[in-house]
Length: 272
Ligand code: NDP
Image (tube, rainbow, N blue to C red; front, side, top):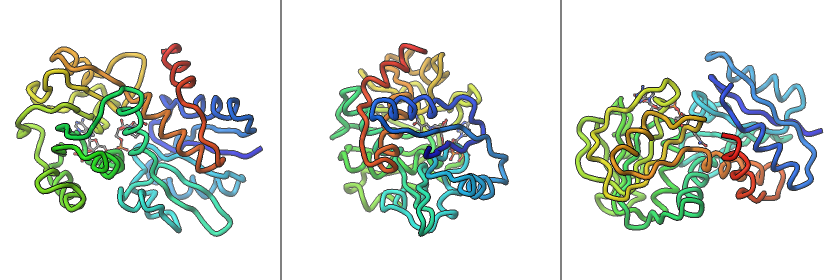
């Protein structure tokens, strides 16, 4: 049976095994998918051990997405642009790194939440692997503004410099949390602050009337960021839809069939 896994630290919260099991059942594919906790300095060794055990592919989550870029022999164009990898495919010629986070996020916002990004003001919190991965797909939707804000401001500025040529004039910019000015139609929390039940220090004025607030984190309870957003009038949305959509893209890469995500997302929501 073909074997897949997700590497991360922490990893206990991951729903990827359930999602891929549901995709496999739906498409009639026989496969195994497990989660593996990797010590912080053992990512490379963990991947090669899994290949040695016959692994066919893997997902990569926090905090290894940037490290995964260095590990692979080839990158897809979207992974190269993101500078981050969340999907590995093990081939006879070597490891191919892809990034399905961005397309997963955009599919969830546009198709599942029914919110168009075109012409909207978008605020992206965070500048790590997940934030990098969503920049190009977000810009392809032609937002009016895309402001990146991060705890380490220099990282946000580097990300903005990298992607500014791909947006319209003045669309992409960066600043620190406390310096964020103006209101936004879509506010995306791509920091890992929610993993530690922390709230990025952005002002409550960031939420425009009718704003969508999406936290890439998911779990039984709303994150501090989603509670904060909802208490200031925004519509909260967790990262479960993004997770299912990015998983469907990875499944399509490995198995050459794209599963139907609606049913799987409904099942997961019912279990929450
Ligand atoms: P990285 O480790 O690459 O980046 C972490 C980011 O979070 C950095 O920008 C970091 O800022 C910031 N950060 C960390 N702690 C805090 C804090 N206490 N306050 C404010 N900012 C903080 O992680 P990823 O980008 O890979 O993942 C980010 C989150 O997105 C995770 O929660 C992950 O689970 C989630 N995710 C969900 C997906 C989904 O499908 N739903 C897909 C991908 C990610 P600094 O630069 O200052 O360190």
